[in-house]
Amino acid sequence: MEKIKGHILLVEDDKNFAMVLKSYLEIHFLKVDVVTNGSEALKLLKDNNYDLCILDVVMPIMDGYELAKLIKKNYPQLKFIFLTSRNLKEDILTGYELGAIDYLCKPFDSEILLVKVNALMDKVGSIDISENQEIHIGNYIFNPSFRTLSINNTSKKLTIKESKLLQLLYQHKNKVLSRDVAQNIIWGDDSYFIGRSMDVFVSKLRKYLSEDSRISIENIRSEGFSLRIDD
Image (cartoon, rainbow, N blue to C red; front, side, top):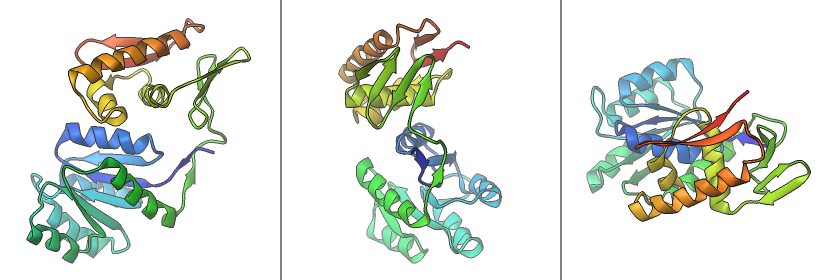
């Protein structure tokens, strides 16, 4: 059963980094809202019940430390962690003194962050979002857990990277999946050579999905790819 493990507010003024991190967490069944400063975060905090906040420190209008003080005052049960390039000892001590349950310095290991976040989400429970793990893509049935893509009683076993790429494309269906986002999430690298490798995987997915003419994976020049499903 697919579940959302928790609802996270990510406060980060680097939009590209925020989108990469958001996509990485969402592919692991976490719902993520993104804002670029503390003032915007306070507006969302009034209307949503978040399980965790991930805070940068250096941001315009209101920095992460000021936001942390207000979270501690107005939402004392809400947990937050800092994820920032401020890595001096005094910065880290300040973060913990403000009530952070963790302080991670950039660059960071995304798997370690995910483990820490999942450990917190296990404590707050989970929310069902569907009755099973099957995703319908046109006439195909995609099961991310078993990495199978099925149509007309035939099933194709996908590789780990093929499955992750199809998940990302589906999450962005009829929108653009940024090439950089996909490369960083799946390969951990956005270099030219990884980009050529990604093109090969996209071509494979096009072939796998070719039995349904309503489905296409479009190449959006200089941006990325888009999974289109015509009704």
